[in-house]
Length: 274
Ligand code: G3H
Ligand code: ZN
Image 1 (cartoon, protein in one colour):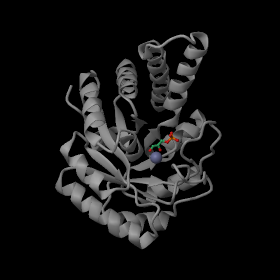
Image 2 (cartoon, protein in one colour):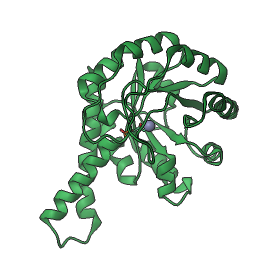
Image 3 (cartoon, protein in one colour):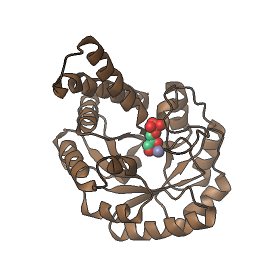
């Protein structure tokens, strides 16, 4: 089936976006979304591109090919892009949206860089997500679940930059391996009322199901999940190799790893269902 477009998915309701690092991630996401009959977003981060030697093409091409084989609409998103060069590379691939992440910059510099990225994206029929309020836990960053996005500043930021979706700091933090984050649901509601574009929750792996359900009810539209898939993948590989220490064929342990990721994706998609 042809690829979906991120903004069209978000226009229909909340959607989960899952990080792709290897082709097995893409296969797991596609098969679980198909089994659940629920559209989803496959996203490749700048860090994943760096892992693959800085060349976007191999992973983007493989991910798009896997996504097209699914009998459910799947969209492709390029995530946490700090490099303008990588932003520009998005246009040569099958992404319908990019997150340009200037959240490390002071407000005025963030606005300037993001407005320019949004102008560039819109000329190429791409939609642009940006981040205001620094969501912690990115590589090299501390976990900062206490950071918050201010609703008045968020409304001004969206007006000044022209972005199409906004990642907000509301209590989650990236790369959490325990599901212990508590979200500021009143703030999510305020941001939803103040900001005319879809709100994005990053670092969702650390957020319990009940908190995620409340966040969706309060106005979160895109839920980004990465670490939960990696925990499933690595846990399955570890268990397999502990039980079969002489295995050398990676297909033996990547099969249960891919199944474990698909099951993690299915668990998330069920949260969105009710
Ligand atoms: O942009 C990606 C997400 O925010 C993933 O965060 O790995 O903590 O689930 P996570
Ligand atoms: Zn993120």
